[in-house]
Amino acid sequence: MGNQKAAPTDLVRRLDPQALIQQAISSNAGIETLERLFALAKDVRAEQAREAWNVAISEFQRTCPKIIKDESAKIATKSGGGYTYNYAALDGIMNVILPKMGPLGLSVSWRNRIEAGKVIANCRVSHDLGHFEESGEVAMPVDEASSFGASPPQRVGIAMTYAKRYSLLSIIGLAPEDDPDAQATGGEGGKTVSMPQRRSQQAPTPEPERQHGGNLWTGQVLTVGQRVGKKADGTPWTLYTVKTKDGQEFITFSDSHADFAREAGSSSVLIEWEPGQKGGQKILHIEAHEERESGE
Image 1 (tube, rainbow, N blue to C red):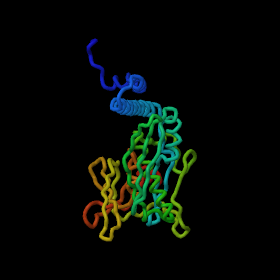
Image 2 (image 1 turned 120 degrees about the vertical axis):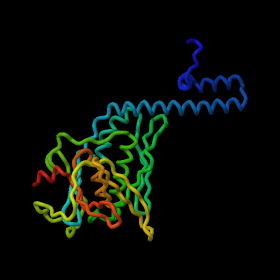
Image 3 (image 1 turned 90 degrees about the horizontal axis):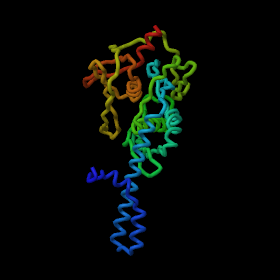
Image 4 (image 1 turned 60 degrees about the vertical axis):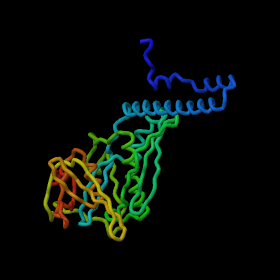
């Protein structure tokens, strides 16, 4: 037992580079020795910072309160109907996590940029000792089709908020949960947000029963994938593939369709679809199945 070698991490913990440097200076050590000791001190500080980050993020994940999907968004469709989905807003997420992160020495920041047709966010969680980890770049298309009434700067802001939210949740390793105490959409205990619209574009009062023109499917969403490309004129596009738990696949170019499918979680959804011109099942409309049933 006495001859057992210490693990590299244990050795780093016991090293005191500053004391070694001071001893070397007192002994009139050569410049090469001092350079090696300064490099060692840098490595030791980096390893200590990395360990501190790991300990802090582990404690944060253990003690962080649940992040609740306590807001709902109304999305108006061109046909005059609409649908809603629940989500946890970025400011709500920050209000939950920052009181827990701060005492642990953790902080959040983003590196953002805007490219043609999309915004890109990279979330960084840093520790006071200097170590940080990043989510990687999360790209979000700037919606030109379904953000009725929103100005170009507003559409960029909406897309950037989405990108920042997804990148933040990715790096902290937590997922929002449905609010078990939530009231019906727009009722007491929940807030409702909607895209700003010009009066001429506001959706009329929906009819008691939406008239469907396509095929109907109900069930649960499994995953939402995406593929990006550019048209001949250079305009970017994003094709989303919605895979369901019963093996169905639907396609859509609509960011709002994809967002709703992502946020649905374990909730049942209703998808209205038609055959695409180049094959596949193209989504015409998506909504919460339970909400539609309760309104019948």
